[in-house]
Length: 245
Image 1 (cartoon, rainbow, N blue to C red):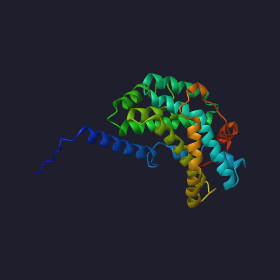
Image 2 (image 1 turned 60 degrees about the vertical axis):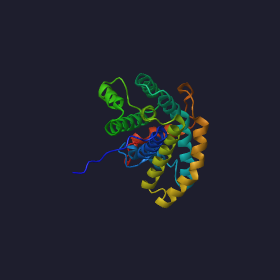
Image 3 (image 1 turned 180 degrees about the vertical axis):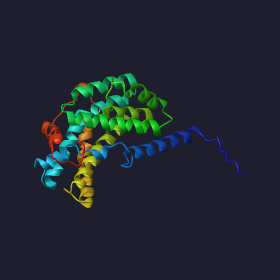
Image 4 (image 1 turned 30 degrees about the horizontal axis):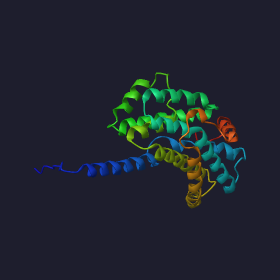
């Protein structure tokens, strides 16, 4: 029998490097579309925007995505930032309840809670080295005292895993852009190649939005593109629909 052994003679610098590299693997996993968090079941109101002719062509789509990024930055990044900066379960629960009161339509509230709950379920199962995730899920699931909204859950998980707040906020903006462009592809508004080109073109816009709204406290959270909120609220009235929101 061959016994595998590991050399414990690594220097502190080597351990730090391994920790940094492992953090990159975690980052890629969180951003991977394969991660079963339910994000691709939502279109950020795009499906309703198309059916109400708010978006009718690729030019409208690009403008719509910019507004989605603006709203994501202005409204949700403060919750991501605060949860990541101080990863504490008590503070997170307060942020979660505050976001529940802040979101202004039923569709976006349900979508946020659904994605957040799915993300916590995955994180509690995958990141066993962070037992707090499973403990908080076991404690709060079904209690009715929290709503598991996606933005504070994402920030909390990233904080527990050791991501800095800037990286966490940039990741959140990327996911918003990725998901709405994916929805546009499945709604046949743009092809797969056109979607890739569009994502590349909007990367700089997303970065500018992130820097504009990053590191803000939750009392500065606001919506700067209210029409998107109105359109998304119409989703539940669509006769036929592909997405949950």
